[in-house]
Amino acid sequence: MRAGRLVSITRASSHSARRLTGVIVGNDSPRDSQREASSSNTLPPYDPVKATLNAAKSENHAEREADPNPPAPQAPASEEAVGDESEAWCQRGLREKDKGNSTEALLWIRKSADAGYVLAQLVLAVAYQKGECGLESDHFKAFDWFLKAAQQGNAEAQYCVGMAFEEGRGAEKNPKAAVEWYRKAAKQDHAGALFEMAVNYMNETGGLKYDTEKGIVCTRKAAKLGNHQAQFNLGVMLYHGKGGVPLDEAKAVYWIRKSADQGYDLAQTLLGLLYYHGEASLPEDTRIAAFWLYKAADQGWGPAKEKIELYCLSRPTNVKGA
Image (cartoon, rainbow, N blue to C red; front, side, top):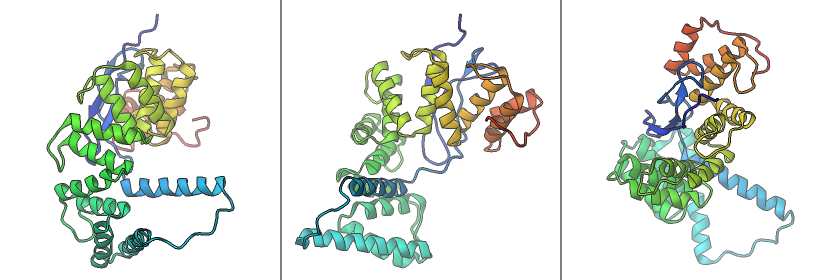
C-alpha cells in the first residue's frame, strides 16, 4: 500500500509581493511524512510588461506564419492614427528608460498612458509599484494604472489587479474581487491566473465552492502553459495519486522536473529526495540527488540545506543524467 497522503495545496507569502503556492513536501522519504513548505522565491520577479511584450511577439509571429503575404496596410483612420502615435510615445519612453533617462522616459510613458495605450499603462503601473523612473513607490497609484489596463481587457493587468485584491496591496483586501479578476485573465489562458483559480477551487476560497475537478483542470492548463508552481503541484498530485488525479509516477517526475528546470526550489528539493531514495521509478543516485538539493540550497531554501547536512552530501561536479 502506498504511504502518500492527500495532497494539500497551500499558500505562502514571498518578499517579491508575488504569492507562491507550495504543495506538501516530504520530511524524509517523500512518501513517509509531509509538511507545509513556504518558498524563498528566488525566481525572477513577475514582470507584466515583459509578459505582455512576449505575448505580442508570439501573436505577431503566429500571424506572419498564418499569412506570409498580408495585404498592404491601408491609410489609418483618425483613431488608429492616435493609437499609432501613443504606441510611438510609449516606445520612445521605453528607449529613454533603457538609457537611464528617467525624467524623459516618464514624460513619454505617461503621455502614452493618458492616451489609453495599454502597454504604457502597465509600464507606469510597474514604475509606481517598484519606484522606478524617479517615482516613489506607491501601490495605490500602481493599482489605478493596472486597473485602467485591466478594464481594457489586458490579461496581465487583470492578473495584477487580482493579486492586488488578494494581498490588499494598493486596494482593500477582497478575495472575491480577486477571483473575479483572475477569472477574466484565466479565460484568456493566463497561466498565473489559471493557477490562482486552481488554488481557490481546491481551498474553497474567494467565494468559490470546493471543486476538485475544476481545480485540476486549471492546474493542468497552467502547467502546460509553463507555470512552475502548477507544474510542481500537478507533479505531486500525480505522484501520490490523490486529489482526484490517478497515480502516474512517470508523469509526476516529468512535471516535477519541468518545474525544477525553471528554478523552483520546492521542485528541486523534491526531485533531489526522489533520487536519494530511489523512488518514483528513478534510480537511487546520491550524486544527482545532491545536484538538485544544492540547486535549491543555493537559492537559500532551508529544507534543502537541512537534507544536504543530514545526508552528508558533497557538492557534485560533472553530473550526468540529472
